Amino acid sequence: MGRVGRHLLGLATIALVAAGLTLATGGVAFAELGQPAPWEWRLQQSGSPVMDNIVWFHNFLFVLIALITLFVLALLIVVVIKFNAKANPVPSRTTHNTLIEVVWTLVPVLILVGIAVPSFRLLFLELDVPKADLTIKATGKQWYWSYAYPDNGKFEFDSLMAQDKQPRLLGVDNEMVVPVNKVIRVQTTGADVIHSFAVPSFGIKIDAIPGRLNETWFKATKVGMYYGQCSELCGKDHAFMPIAVRVVSDQEFASWVETAKKKFASGGASTYASAAGPTQ
Ligand SMILES: [Cu+2]
Image 1 (cartoon, rainbow, N blue to C red):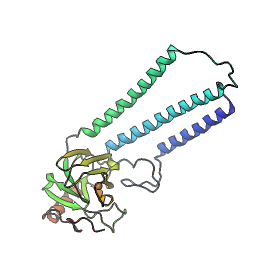
Image 2: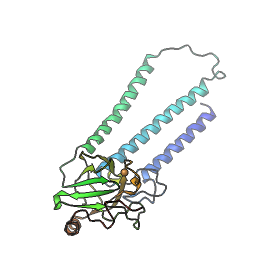
Image 3: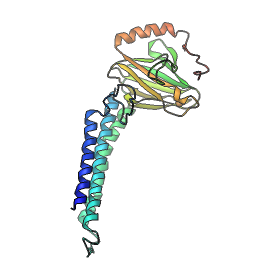
Image 4: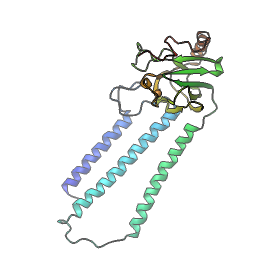
């Protein structure tokens, strides 16, 4: 292999090592759990077992794709350098090579099976809702979310974007509150048009469709605030109906339920005008 080829391979190796290091160190150093960070280009930090698996699968594919790309690049470089008209004036007349043909059929099949196995495992993990400790119904409305807690006294309340809260465009007046390390079943529906309930750190995104009840689940493994957004274009204030989930200890959850039952006894009271949506 010539000098150019070695240089190119060297550069490619450096790029792969750099990408590997970024993956290993967790990427953006200033990322905060549960919310996006400036200049973030990777997945948000995981806060649930499903998201742990998504992150693993993402990194697995990243490395696999990088290796295949480098392999093809190396083959191209070899061909360009070794088999150009100057270096190889008398071309080979080979048309078939059974061994190579078997290899280039079998190896991609094995790679695809290697991708399919963890892919289906992840899909089933997401789709099979384990026995739930708590069910919450999230209803998408133009343009805010309502959360109902049928297991805890059947109260329901509206959650609207709060202009004066941080993080900007993610803070809400009434957060959805859940206990830590509990399986939360989220049922979603839409009151008017299709919305989508998505929280990146939990690895969930599920459509909220009028006349239908979809369900997904998450188990938050760390207490804290987690933010998501409506992820199905639903009208003019689609960008202003964030999802804010506060993960708390069991005791804190119990006392929050008591307060919430009284506060939302009338059903859906919000500090903002709810029927008309947020005033922009
Ligand atoms: Cu929307």
